[in-house]
Image (cartoon, rainbow, N blue to C red; front, side, top):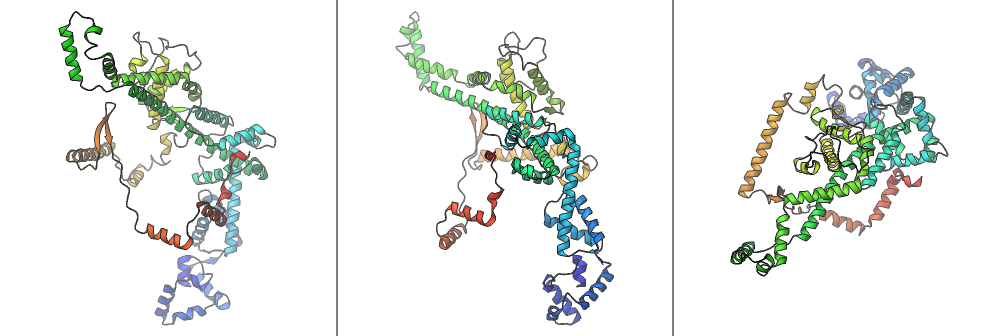
Length: 558
């Protein structure tokens, strides 16, 4: 009992809680049979007397009502904001009791302390959220679920809906949703000092609720649930909007390339024996220098063969890129260009790096011309049009004409590609987003003060030059190893080829792995016990046992 209380900070509720190995060890020390311990009773005058002696020896005391109130306040202030799992809250309570030299309350009293602490924290959390929202923000949120407010119900359903397939319609819909939720004007940093787990738990609770469910809760809880839902979805929609932008720009380019490839493949006919054809043409031209081409050359080679030769000569990389640019311009100007004005006005792109300022300046120029008639082909000569860092070299001839004028449509395409690349590198971020937020916000709050500790935790040097030198060394070693493997044929089928005139690394398909040794035995045993199982039956029985489908909710029910 003494050692158990010293280690656990409490007395056992039943004798079985005391490890048998500990009982045997102590029994051997005091020269008493271990079986005698089973006859000891945990209730009665003798047990109470022993507990008093143990408390006195260890400095513990029984808990009181005042202690329970103090523990409730401590849990509500220190544990509940960061820990949501009840078992871990209980563990933290027991540790705190041991630290305070207090014998924990009984199981029933512990449960009451946990419930009271969570209720106290929830009330404080709701009150703080409502205070930060202010009267106007509170009324706007309550109006979303007010009875008879069809617009609020539709907005709430739209906020819960995930974006569809990559396309212009999905992008415009996400922009509309983001604009709508921003009109609620939620306070910046509303939950900035709250645990991510806490916000995620309240969001998961709110995402499954219908307007009638919100109305069934108390007003404070209702406002807090709506605030968490709208704040979380605002950040998630911003992330989804960036994801759609990246995927859509890639889709526009990839679709144009595929279209041009298909067109060139249809036009291109490989002509064999070019050297012989060239010799025949030269012989015919020298033999009949005064004859017209149709009479002198066509009988020798043939008009169709010559046309195929011309088509093959034109189908080089330069022509391919030019055709891609033309196709891109056509599809963008006729369809995708309508996304530009809302895209420039809604997400809120920001940049902390001056090296990528040209992209930001280019976006300002596009925003300036957003309302200008699309028939205006060129920018004014007085406008500063950033080129370096925005327009790639292979696009310069398509963007700038022979009079040094910058054409709007190809320049807008270049800006979108540069924006996509900058966002993917996290050089440009989106204000209010979660994954695409300011990268400086990813750092811990005490990073500057405890930089050494954080660098030691990730095992990286403080000196950036040392980090770069080590990275270069490892990359060089890896490339040297690949080069040697390619040279001696030990690269496992990896080859360096070309694709559309550019270097291309080809990796062979992997052979299927061997089936695990025990898998077939497991399958045979399942068949032996239950026969052939229908997956729907498995799903149905799993639902009967766990009730997991109760967690599902459909926005289509609105």
